[in-house]
Image (cartoon, rainbow, N blue to C red; front, side, top):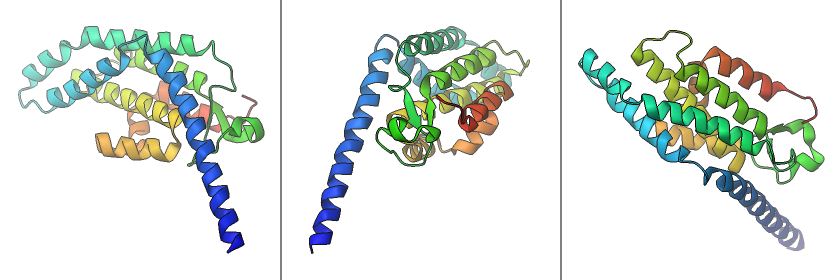
Length: 205
């Protein structure tokens, strides 16, 4: 009975630490996002792309997709601004664990399992700019698919930073009916290679 009580107390303490840690990350990202209209623009684009891609008439599809140009440029610019703003935060404040579950304050005692969210945001900013500028010369529909994937991956990274990798995976699947691997395969090679390097990087953060 005493062992069970100790285990319950440890579990409760762990839960308190986890929630407090996650709230710190949520507050940090939320404070920076408050300066932008990024979330609204991203929702507008992802929903708009879905509607446009479902259009049966190709000319109508292209016409609809072309109306998103200003919003796309705004998103690319604001993600870059967000990445620049987050750069002013400390490495400890922007550390995120790569294990499936959240380990509170892992950056203090398990640095090999931690990556820098600031670097990840710069990867997303570069990838979005590449996709928005259509440097690979994609047709309108393929470009929309790619931009959707870039936005989904950015959203996944923000959820991962705020909660955990597992929660981010679940939210991606629930909201967009696509898994993380499929999204990673659908972004540009510029984003994918940098993302994978970031994930594998064991250098000191």
